[in-house]
Amino acid sequence: MVRFLTAVIFGVALLVLFFWTTDVTQMISSLKRTNHFYLILGLTAYFVSVWFRTIRWRFLLLRNTQIKTSRLLPVVVVGYMANNILPFRIGELVRSYYLNRREGISTTTGISTILVERVSDSIALLFLIGVTAVFVPLDETLSGFSTISNIAESIIVIFFVLPFLGMFTALVAASLFRNRTERIIYKVSEPLSIRIKNMLRESSSKILDGLQSLNSINAITKVLALSLPVWIAESFLFFFVALSLDIHSEFEGITAMISASILVTGITNIGSSIPAAPGGLGLFELIARESLVLMPHGTVSRPDAAAFAALTHACLLIPIIILGQMVLWANGLSLLSLSRRKNNPLTKRSTSGGE
Image (cartoon, rainbow, N blue to C red; front, side, top):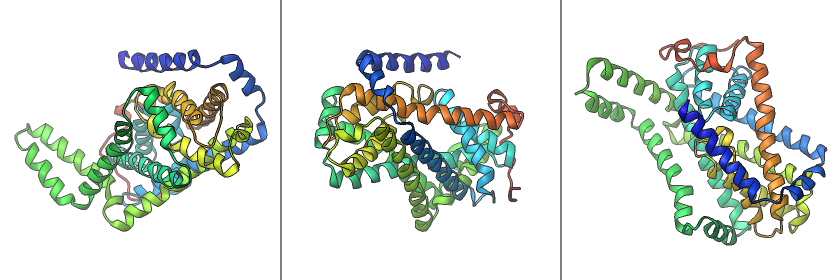
């Protein structure tokens, strides 16, 4: 409970900072001119990205079970709903518990596939940022973030790139050299008690089961390729929200606006990936606002950028929360019941298909 309250207070503090540094009157004025047609297109793009996430997760789980994408979709929706309500990305655990409950797949295996998802997301976003940066120089944006945060540009680049590349490399190595990884774990666990040793070895085996989608160059390529449409679709949510607020008129043409949407999507999602407040509350708004203000080939005011950040985050949070709750109600479940480990044994596995 203390950790939960700490995370919520952290998010609220950042949200207060967001509003404190924004002309709220002008921000509300910007929100009032929202074009709902473009907003609906943006929400459609977001749910397309959720569908692509489900397709990718099915691919990651294929080595462990055969499940129809349509059966996985409710699990993904509930997981994202939980992430938006609970702090520290606990929704990832909830998703694994729900997967275990519906399909009998080990929770540990589910968590390891979600870890692959998260790292693949970051690699895909870095790739999209890199490709877009060829057409839109990021010198001014990087310099602006450095000035605001008082952190050297090189440190910002390292923070954005190295942790994700390092983690991805470690996961790939563990999958490609599974036997060697298991031998190391067995050797390290040898001095431990029999109970802890067996638990560690069993858990590590299930984690490695979840990493099987990274055991070949072909499989790795597919995982990364399946991650690109996820973020391209979500970038169109950012793009359509900008259109709905008439922000595109502040850029030098529609191409510059599309490029800015991809860049803001990448920077915001990587920057707010720190597991803290529910749904990245506060941190998302601050990073999205400053990213848009600092975009090259654009002259977006801070109040307009704040309206964009708030509306985009609302589109990412509210619909999926409502839909996720509807899924739980339809199945006679609650978020609390899914969070109880006793209802989600780690040892069950499935080898058969869905309905």
